[in-house]
Length: 276
View 1 (spheres, rainbow, N blue to C red):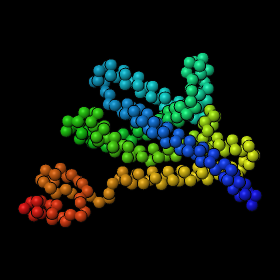
View 2: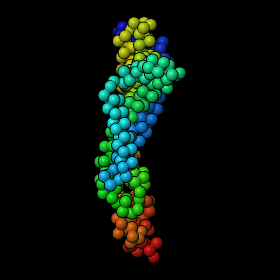
View 3: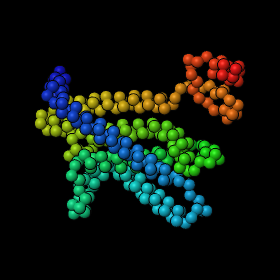
């Protein structure tokens, strides 16, 4: 009973502080995940630009250099803990550069650390998502005159992004939890609030229970929302062949029909009103 009464006492006294810490955690996770996705998207696209021996030497040199830089970036930030990355960027860079490079805001440092860490993971996810698309998609796009940029933006990336949506959601949930290491640079997120409250009243386990329940509630909610987004991106499960003209029939184009319109009014091939 003392345990639950302690939890109630902590919530009654510090509930606004806990909510403020959770708000900082969510804001940092959302912003850093979005920026990290952009970084990963750029790196993934650069890693999949076609390059052959027949290309000009200048193109092959710069593509090779860019890919080497991306590879170093990915391996360094995937191979080291985020807490050490935060220490190095927030405390180490001012020390190395004699304060020429220092952060005036801890928010900027936290967003930078989590963003570049997320970008390193997303770079490989995007690259995998792009190369997972059937090569026939690219060949078909080129056969109708699309250049590489048009092929990527109109054909490949929409499919690749849908394929990597689970990984994007996974990184977001990881970021919600991993922002807890930002206390090392004095960023006041949810876990830092717990540390501060425990320092005042020494009720470590009751406060840790509140933290655990809070993290679990947020991650479960985020998972449900992400699954809903994935289903929305899948579209409807029922498709019917468009039967408006012979060219469409020959192309085999599919779309969602208007369920409220009778079939004989939509079809021109089988004596519908438009055909008459």
